[in-house]
Length: 452
Ligand SMILES: *Cc1c(COP(=O)(O)O)cnc(C)c1O
Image (cartoon, rainbow, N blue to C red; front, side, top):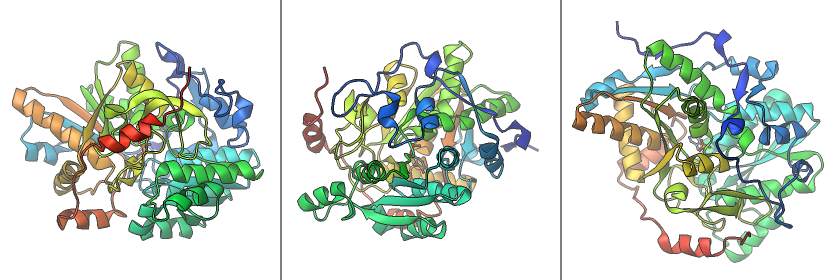
């Protein structure tokens, strides 16, 4: 029988997260204090994060040990499966071999739980009582709410208004886990009130919700802030994905030629890609590494690589990243998890160094790919993951045109069971492509902070 699944035993759950920072050929630009524009020190971040996570943010250790309590929770869904998409290959009539790493089997339905568990653990160790956070599509909020329930922490979630209205089941899930969920922008914070004063009908954005969650943590000594993507420590926690995939590709007896992940803030992409980029830096992999973003929110393919704020109200440090401008409110596409104005500094940096490339995909092409994948493989991808699926299919079709075998590995970051409303809209012909919103982005870029 042909092999479909490449499963690792529970004993092969990685014991360390792999940190690419010390291996990079050039260091990351330092984050800057939003007031002084001087490089941040660890103490500047202490009101928001426990020191253990702050130290991971800047760690020079190539490997960071995963606490046993975190590994024990990982054991519920890790090692995650890697599958060969044989029926999709046949449907595409391609000589390519298509593999996908599937993160949708976590109880939260996506990769987000990999970092949520770690962040809740370190906060609990540090004596935090409550975590505040933002969520776009709701995947991060539900993962953090679940992790907080495991560790006995309270959880406060600011959910982007359009998702709050579009996705009541995600909200209900967070509430099942005991979280308190508020639509953002809200009247609960100065940041939210400032936005509502100017845009009473604001659909919200991740940048606005981050401002609200950060403000709450900054003002309350017992509340800390948790971010579901973008930061180095978040990307670090996701490297279990790529480490397992390296072993699973070895089981399959193949080396990937192309590695693909969708990118909103960059964490699932980095989780799969960074361990392979580590191999590339040692001359042990030649793979092309591709990050896929939505054409409606094209931070890497159309944005600028420069210092910008992580949030809309400018409470966060400045980081050097690909950005569309912190005041850019992306169109309400259904891949809510990809509607962020910036990109992880680490992902931006490896793209700038030429170690990875970025492409964009239109919303309708992403859904068409997701439906084609579902019909062949039986798994309905999250709308975000559809972007990776679309690029994987594109690469498989290139291989057919060229008549060469190509080994493709992509990250299926989550399932779409809570996103069926977007599939209903797709099948009803109600989804549209968005042209690159050049005018709005130019306006937002004009407001970039000037850093010498
Ligand atoms: C949040 C999310 C994303 C986007 O976030 P990244 O940090 O870029 O990974 C992608 N896919 C799924 C399923 C998500 O939940």
